[in-house]
Amino acid sequence: MVAINKYVLGASMVGTFFGASVLLKDYVGGGVCPSKAKIEGKTVIVTGANTGIGKETALELARRGGRIIMACRDMGKCENAAREVRGKTLNHNVFAKHLDLASTKSIKEFAKNILKEEHHIDVLINNAAVMRCPHWKTEDGFEMQFGVNHLGHFLLTNLLLDRLKESGQSRIINVSSLAHIVGEIDFQDLNWEKKKYDTKAAYCQSKLANVLFTNELAKRLQGKDLTKYNNFV
Image 1 (tube, rainbow, N blue to C red):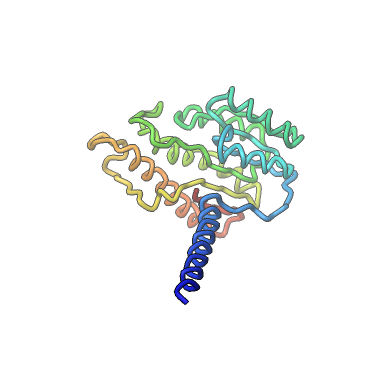
Image 2 (tube, rainbow, N blue to C red):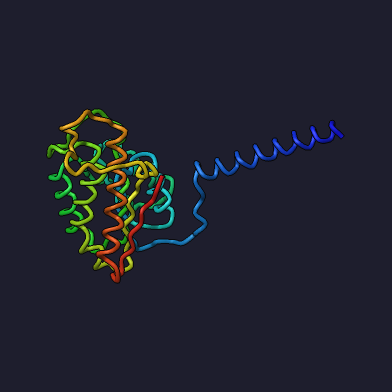
């Protein structure tokens, strides 16, 4: 009986470990979107699209037939990524555009060109982010992570908002992070000038700002034909 109990206990532990491993993999690795919907005729802007989540998003949406605008700071990397996406999807409506979210001048110039060239914008994916950098400042003097991750996308969204509204059934997706849960916003010292700089806390602050911005935007646009999402990674 003791031997049987040991065997059962051992098998149970192995099963539990295996099940937990599968759940952890699914949680960390994320799921696969089951939708096979096509988006021909839709214009999608993805910031930070030359690598990581942004690049994979651009690739998948290009496969679905969308007109993809990859907005990045490093044009060399952006052109290479756009070329790769076009090659893999055979979708030639994939374009690289310069956008430096650490510069309000660049953001305004990008938005001006987009509004001139694009008659409609169906999806804006605010994905670009800076993570745990030294105490750098943006061109306009803001703490880098707060400036790029939140303020840059805040300005970009507002500059493109009317065109998004006009397009009908459009979407704004702000890519945030579970780090927002431990984030705190110090409205008295957003630039970390009065206290020792903590790069991790600064990142969490910027991600919390993403969530608060999305929630407030959803309230203000309630009843409009425009959907707002927080996407946590």
